[in-house]
Image (cartoon, rainbow, N blue to C red):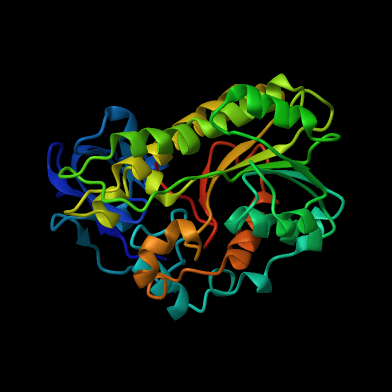
Length: 358
């Protein structure tokens, strides 16, 4: 058992550090409960700068304060039960290093756990599939015996060879185009993966704001998924007996809580981060609107992939564990296959399968 802790030194209004999503934040004590049902997490804390809706009940394992005192052990000594992780680590370098230290099989070599047979015979619509991760998704799905359907503006020979069906002239920035593309998908769908994205190689900070590029990123990455799902609904793809699971490729960049770690003391890339935050908010709202229909919507951070979109960061690919797109595709499909109504509205890191806080 974990060591017993004396909480009596904590009083309402006292400041301390409280953990959320693998990161410790400034917080203050709201109250300390003596109720038996609160014995594992007796301290209610309020995170500085956040609303009351983000208050949490926490135990000593997620608090840092000199006022917390360990009680002497009583009875037989026993091994402490390992705490089950819920959230991924914000620090990408530390996350990769932990995976190496623990020999995390799924993180380090997705082929050891990925089973493509789950997609055999499944019809999968991939939005944005002519290059990079999208193209690799088509290839992997074909290898698994699925029927991959890819959308694009214009196709390539590589895409032609991988797709069961190609829907050309698709613009994710236009609802009518998305609706038309969804209507052209032949037969009922099992999965839909929104993969279209845009991340320009520009300096984007307070000394060089990029308004046009920011709006373009928001249009593609933030509003694109909304147009896609609305297009699916308008085309009747969500009303049949068979309803698809929807995976939206977002990014850890859309986590507001992680900015204090990943962008500490520097900010920057405003358009990129804002567009992904817009994406996540839209996905959570769509998950709620589609809940009565039994259509799950999940956001996936695909992991750090070595694509043209991330080439501006190639100098840190190695230390942060970036993988080739074909590995990234397997990671995405591994999580996509697990989507159910129980996971709708969640934001998952495809590297380790843990959640990312909003």
